[in-house]
Length: 359
Image (cartoon, rainbow, N blue to C red):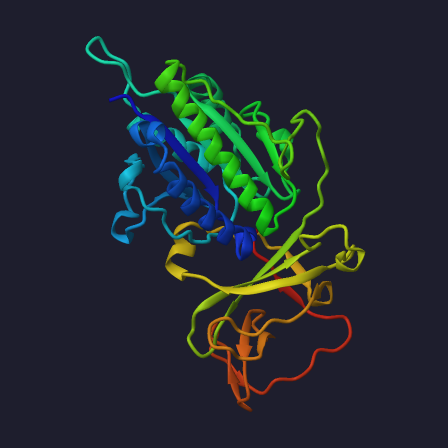
């Protein structure tokens, strides 16, 4: 049986925390459910989901299988979408190298005895600019894999330099609006792409990707030759719960999902999106470990969250060690980072500089 390999290479960096990663996770479930009732897809499609932040790995619905070195394509009827973790950094070069290692490991080539797999389809989702040196990985892709694969890159939001993605493929798409309905339309479009291509391999013996029209949905093709100087849209800081000792991310956005609302724009600061608990082990596993050494002043951050781990009302308390933790009604608090005990005091004018993550 000739397989149609489908890879999803998903950015799980800190700026994806909250609604974006939740919508991607829900969208994956919808894609798999819809494809399972399509006879062409059910016969040919095999799926693998790869995640990258500072590092990359294969995701599985079964945690015991997540630590496998390389991808394993799974037939559609047996595939169950995994839960997506969050990591630090946006190492697109590492993600592409891992993808290519998987392709070289997974794809069955044509031999004298049998025909190999159909040309793989890869959907790359990212919402930021690479934080690693990606040039060697891009060169490897263009020299060895580009002609043998169908790659579609999708910029989630408007914080991606599309000229970088244009070095990988001519299929560079922009999902500018990131509300629930836009994500749903987008994933229906992906499902339609896979269905049309699986039908094409079955009926016409052609494995060229069949991209449906994007008219009527918030998805448009980008001009990768148009180089933009894009301002940073996110500020993400890390806190730790003093009750549970678990870490969490506090996410701020320069503008909300509704960019037409002038009241939601902060030209000199960032507005609170939310605070989200993270799995420390998975976070470290997917982070590259670099300290970028960049700070942001608290006067630029609008809004203070409650702790997402224990519910303490003050989720943004700054210790003398420079780290963030949560506090509740106790008169005496302790910092889960350095162990210091003391009483809280207010911040004077000018704010405090706090360390920000790579995003």
